[in-house]
Length: 257
Image 1 (spheres, rainbow, N blue to C red):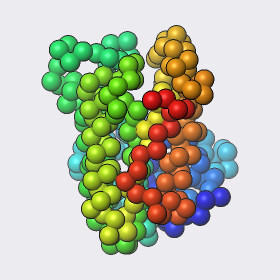
Image 2 (image 1 turned 90 degrees about the vertical axis):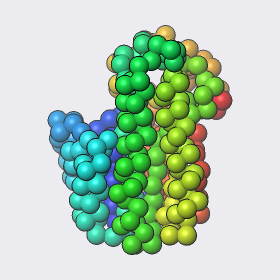
Image 3 (image 1 turned 180 degrees about the vertical axis):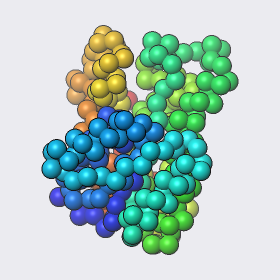
Image 4 (image 1 turned 60 degrees about the horizontal axis):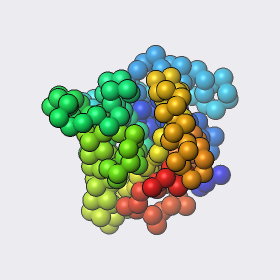
């Protein structure tokens, strides 16, 4: 078990594949969890699964964290419930439209509204949660923030995203490194993970098997990642064992470059 100085961890996108796995791993490690998602139905299902598995009952908050007031309210409620130093896992994000139309979509075919929505989902959500979480973390002189970027942030891997998604995830990386520099003296550690293609239920439901197979063949380890791989890296970055790590991006991609 990784020792943790945090009283609780707030997890956005908690009802998705990576979020559910992180909630489970944190609960198994004895960490109290605040599960945040915009889907009340999926949050209820997550809470039932946790109780049935004997992993405790996470506190759940229904919120759209692309909305500033909703993000601030979720952090305030979660921080009050934690009652001490807390961590934040920014997992909320996603793509716009169908996967067939999304991957490698050319810029000239992209509407401004689509670009803005991709940034809202993947960058603004993380920014708003960080903005709300930093003041109470500073009050405790300790905190951990881990955000999910993507290998797409390199902008050099075909079939990983598109120019808007690549740019949005690159912004998450830049925000992580900038905040780490400015908040280090306050005792707040800011890191990120950059997954490659990850076998969530959503991916397997909406993406053609041949697309997944093509990614697996070009990955040095011979297969794409699982939600457990990404969640395990995030759990390490939320634990006391990583207290001297900040401003880093762990690429959880099986050696993909």
